[in-house]
Length: 115
Figure (cartoon, rainbow, N blue to C red):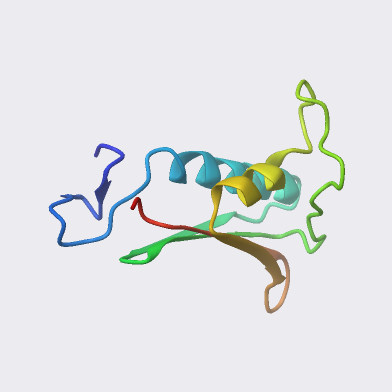
């Protein structure tokens, strides 16, 4: 499937379309953060993608209840950590995090379709 298709159907103007420049890095970033946050817990990380005419909702659940923090001063460009939510904030139309019922948290973002 190429990156400009949705739900396995080539875009013909009749359905939602993915943004090749936005979804892959956002999905990768928040999923990687979830995997790192859940490391050692034995719990899975859950990814949910919902595509619609108004964009794509990306949600990642992890077992860690510690809430992520966007740094007030970005880490240096050569740092290995610390820029993930800055990237999510820059590339998404909206994002957030909430504690899930039971345990863990969900980090989510919305990517608008191309105009």
